[in-house]
Length: 453
Image 1 (cartoon, helix red, strand yellow):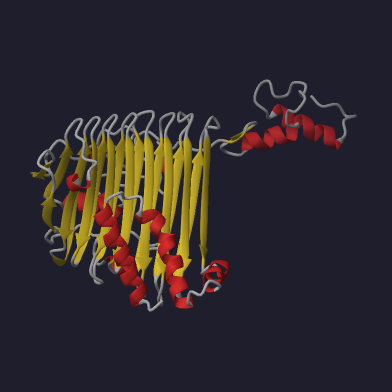
Image 2 (cartoon, rainbow, N blue to C red; image 1 turned 90 degrees about the vertical axis):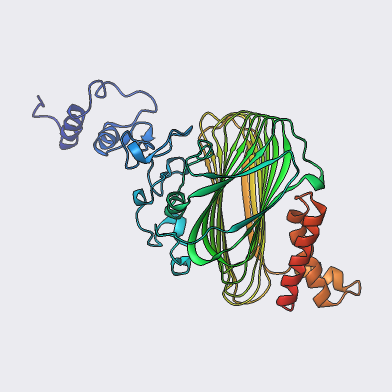
């Protein structure tokens, strides 16, 4: 009981001490919080002496548990929308995702009215037609959706991808055999996917590189379509795979593509995205390490003209130790209302010691009226890493570069073209397929001509 001689301040301190959990009213140790601070921490939900305690990422029985989920190495099916990238909602059912409003982080840059129904379940149109060019050793099959190989790389992470998952009836599966050496240019596997109309449609592709194989697979999108596509990529232990996704659509096309890769132990994966044509193109590549020693390179090139919207949202999930990732995306924009979006998420989980990662995005704005949004994100849950970083820059021509070229007698318009070609060629030359690299250089030249740069 308090004595009559105690001051008002002493009374208040005793009342606070009696409200503490057992043991907190003992003599304060050096560095411990004062009784007042300790009481406040106790009364604020989620706080203790160590600071804020974050809520569970995957609470038991979350909104996507049960039949909506499928067994998955990272606990897919339970998550918290707009939380840490580790807690992202995943489901094969579009109904498990709320209707898209544009206020969500994943959709805040996307002009939703231009999706033309891809966020709906009624994707009743015909899938793009398929033309295959491949060496005899590589198998390309069209299979029903019940094939057990489907669903091995990942689970849809947004409503559009889930709607496509529900709607597709057949899938194309590319299988690279064990120890196959497909490094030569004449052994490149090319799938030409040509749009079959503007009724909203779904498409599904699975690329599986078996152990110790080496190969290049090109997904070449052409024609006119309104299509939502899921691409699964599985790279087994020790395999080396390059996947090049080219979006060279007609100007009216709307294309959403979720491209999820699972990288095995000591495997090497290179992913290249080329966005050149279409009205709205939204590519969401994800790479997840499933074994130690994995090495991933992700490249992107995009050239947006007046009115075009090109969006790239990628995710690299370092879930295991001693893996390496490098991300380099470059874009050019010209014309009124040309808009590009690049969002790069890299997550280093607490078990991913020895991680080495870096991501970079560069944008070159060629004319007035264009806009580039660039958002690099890096989440680190362990400090025991080799290195991690990111960089982003958006700007106009470098005056010093132009001056250097003009000082050597090169006209300004030619100098500007040289700068753009050199800027984008860093990505083109990563493909390592000479004929394809030449085609892309010509495409860049065509874009420059269209903009009269």
